[in-house]
Length: 213
Image (cartoon, rainbow, N blue to C red; front, side):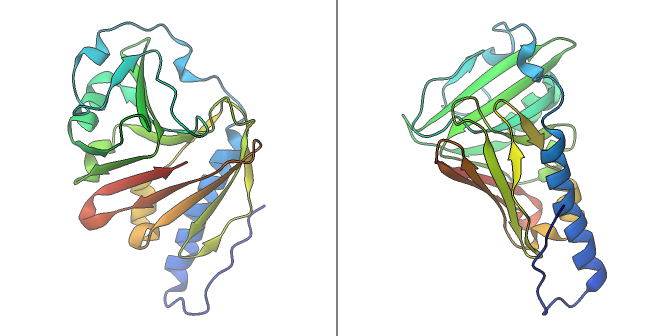
């Protein structure tokens, strides 16, 4: 069930309803995240990570360095060539010792890339992500987390994202609904007590994700 605290200043009821439906979709994704297998269950090798696509951010195949805070992640998932294009186009804001990245090469030419720690990912043209799944993972060390979505149409009721589970965002759908005319914030409360947030913005047709742990 979703509760939205809508503003009385909304000028366009249809747009508000559409944006609320997208926020609801995020929560439905959270509720469904308890089912299914982690795509990272496939085999790994060094072929994919040999392409230096994330500037100087250290990238490892099949693992990451420990960084402070819970192991919540922003992830990209899809066909390897589409991921290379997305990584080639990204600008990464990171701090040594506070950020890490891992790559898992999966069967059928697909791969999983995840970003740990405090990090900012920015694309000047969000269309490069059309063929890539973008999402949030709860990690394995925080005991699972409650996640609530704050947007221009209100705040959703917190939904549980269990240990090791993830859910996909839909930046294109969020943009089409006008939800990203203002920042969307995903608030996380881990069972361990850690609080996190991911801020999603769409400056001038681009996409920016800022994770703070």
